[in-house]
Image 1 (tube, rainbow, N blue to C red):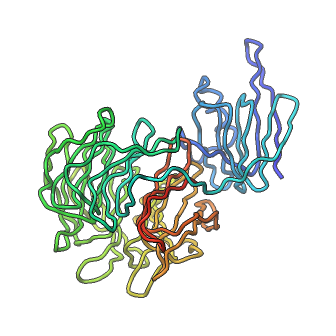
Image 2 (image 1 turned 180 degrees about the vertical axis):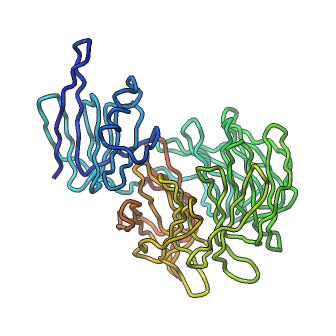
Length: 444
């Protein structure tokens, strides 16, 4: 059960602000900002002093974390979360997505409830082409751009756009080069940079025109690399392979449309992960090369253009996932090494440069996806487990360090993409599974 109470605050104009609170629930939405080591009262003051910009907050008592949300709707989506509180101002309706699920319509004096649907996976429009090993980018206009990949017929140069409002896909301009195992980065000006995957070429997608234009080529051909957007707007590409495993890195400058080499990693690697940290450094972890599966990690410093080693993971892994959490930690999950398929997870603390193990997933998996949700949880989806392809999903709670299973997708899939949408939903597209290459798409 949950509890709602209201406090009337009288201001100098004689108006009232209605404040509501729901214990053990949190908002699912787009966070304006997060604050740490703050009391609940201080968090409420941040909201009431925002002049209407902020209307809702999550407060986590266990670690004194406050998440503030922009005012954008009178209907908000929430779900159960123990030891937390949802506090809001002047919201006339709340849609509660939990089990059991209710809808509460509130005023300053009354509350009524009626049953509603439980949040799960839903199928949405299919892509026009089956594809896996593609990229997916959320654009500034809210559409999702899917590009390239492969299927049973060919490596692809086609691209298409998903519109959440209609639940449909439309084809858009084709890339000049068919590519897979490439990277795609959304730039500050709204363009999307695609690099590698079939040589050293790169190109830019313009959402306004729906067309691609070639830009400067990388210094080194590569695939299975990573691409990270830096605070200065440059894009850092690192590692991968081109017949040989690579430790080289290079930077793309949108202003000049050119690439420049920067410091090389200490270890050549592919199938690694990369995250841009709150301090501006880039963390690269794991992967493999001709010698071994790796547990090493290193940090790139954009100001110096150099890499330094940091603490090693507890488990060597590749084909894993890496997610940045609201508290600045980095969560690594699953993957594969010489001992088998992994369900283990661990956390990187940027302040200490060390890794600590956390709760293990219920299922070992690799080539899955991981998405950090607006409520701070991490959604891990599908992937492979040995010869089996999975449709299961589970949620990691950073506050408790534990996993809980959530609804399963309608089909098994791996080598798919997962994109977080403006409304907080996650769009999973394509991949391959027990039925072969997929064009099917689902929403969580």
